[in-house]
Amino acid sequence: ARDAVTLTGSTTFMTSQVDPGAIGRGGNISIEAGSVSLANGAKLTASTDGQGNSGNISVFADNGSVTLSGSGTGISTKTTTDGAGGVIAIRTDNLQMTNGATLDASTEGSGAGGTLFINVDNFSANSGAQVRTRTSGSGDAGTIVVNVNDALLLSDIGTGFFADTTIGSTGNGGNISINNARFVRSDTVQIANGAVLDASTAGSGAGGSVLL
Image 1 (cartoon, one colour):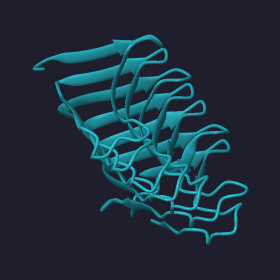
Image 2 (tube, helix red, strand yellow):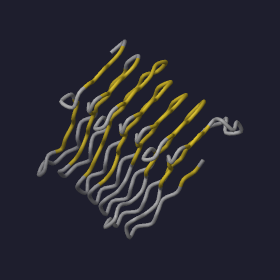
Image 3 (tube, one colour):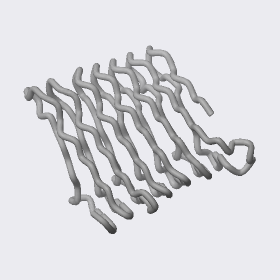
Image 4 (tube, helix red, strand yellow):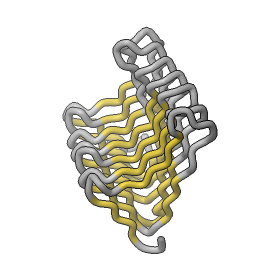
């Protein structure tokens, strides 16, 4: 799409799935537009419940913006089996997440969680918005890689980056890596009002690491 792509409402979604018992990799979802907006429960999902890896999801809005807003709104890849979770790649000038929206490449099975790549000029998340590659199974959590050229702002309790493990899981936590050549500026990265970067473990696997 040359201009804007807007998905609104909990019944609005794009999905790619490997069903239980199926063999083969899931298909990819790719959006390129001037701007992309998901709101009020709209979703992009790629998952595997069968014998194969999840598909990948890419959203590119070069010279524009990507906005995710509202509880239930999100972009996700997931595995519940031994297949690997898919990659989520976001590339845009401005990425804004708010009101419980999520980017999620988690695993509930023995396959590794996907990797989340975010390449932006500016990134803001607040009001419970989350970026996560959590494991609740035996597979390791994925990696979150954020390359930000200008500013990163995380604000409010419940908001943050999570590459952690849940109670009862055996997989290891993932890594969170935030890269910015302007970290000499004190206002470049702000984590405020209870927001977190979390690569901890609540299960029997090792915790991950946070690199700034």
